[in-house]
Image (cartoon, rainbow, N blue to C red; front, top):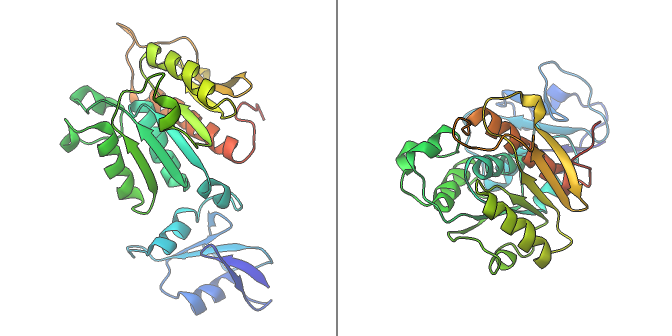
Length: 271
């Protein structure tokens, strides 16, 4: 019988059980994952099953870490995600949160760009720490992402993106993410990037300020290769600030839209 053990094709006897496999291959494992779910009882294994055996506190090798990061994923997702390159323009509340989600998903490569430094008000919604105040966001985010997965492929740029450089910075990405706070910067990306790379899908955001209902944040298809996340209304302005919960909801929508595009699925599908 053929199964996948720690993301590696493995042949086992036909009558092997899940815990029998654990006892023979890694008896010290205290977490057993079968087809993306933690399992606490023994059961017969079947052709094509995916098994991961995890020991808490163990520091894995690069190959083992990759297997462990995807142990809870839906089977069949990882190879497509690992082969993909995603660009993120703007590394604030949206961009830094999207990057964390994609690294945890096992993305192959991220291209990250932001000119700004971290300042205290960023900490209310962005994925940085107080000891990183004053650092460039691109440099700090690289360090934080490498703490999640030291083997991830990251390309970072400390620069202000504009019509002239955005096409070159993000050349070769499979999906482009717009994660700016500034409406002028959003307009620039939506103008310049499709001109440079007309076939590459863009996932943008608009309308995520305040503490309004979560369910008003949606993912919509605006043009053939443009998807927009948000409620398209609640912009940051006096009396309407940017707060971690709603920014995080929108960022997760964007990250999931990227994942669905990589998998060949429609990010704006209702069902």
